[in-house]
Amino acid sequence: MGGYLIAPSLLAADFSRLGEQVAAVEKDADLLHLDVMDGHFVPNISFGPPVIASLRPVTSLTFDCHLMTTNPDQLLPALAEAGADVVTLHIEAMPDPSEAAKSAADLGLRFGLVLSPPTPFAAVAPFMELCSMVLVMSVQPGRGGQEFDSKVLSKVETARNWIESHELKADIQIDGGISPATIMAARDAGANVFVAGTAVFGAPNPSEAIRDLRRVIEGET
Ligand code: DX5
Ligand code: ZN
Image 1 (tube, rainbow, N blue to C red):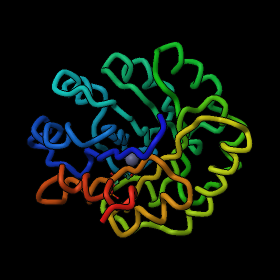
Image 2 (cartoon, rainbow, N blue to C red):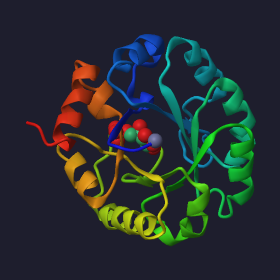
Image 3 (cartoon, rainbow, N blue to C red):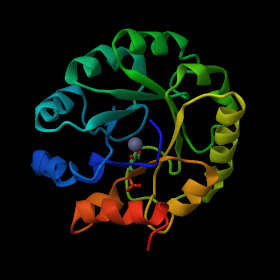
């Protein structure tokens, strides 16, 4: 996708007024990050294709769906139908994602892979050519509001070096604990897509919070 992109995570929004919350970030967000959790791959259950479908008509933002589910490939047709644009699947849930990548492409979805904090970059390296995005989790997946784990920064560097040395175009997304205090370290390690839940929807003005994050990474103060 190119450039620095900010992806507010709707998981931190007020679920009693999802439409309004999306409208609050529409102008400033680059992507809308949608965390799909199944109560099995992670303990929590969040939302899935029906909720995503109900949001599709109210926004033109790109829907970036982070699948924290067992058998994530089985959700792809319903997500495509619901209006998803990008799907990212955990490599821990699907150690050989080649078929899933093919299905995603057939469904017109951009495809990416996700690494939980303990999983090394080597787990996704063989599949990087299939990916338009690699997502490095900087917290344990499953809930928002956790502290950024700076131990994953070396994995972001590894991913950046791999992408450059193989002349690939994949984006590097980072997710978990991103705030004005942590986003610079993620950028400097090589991430270019920044997910922020609490830092955006926990702020009094979500749009202003996105602009603050952007000012930090673009080096203006
Ligand atoms: C965690 C989710 C994140 C979460 C981030 O499992 O993948 O997208 O919403 O929330 P914050 O920014 O609060 O860490
Ligand atoms: Zn996420």
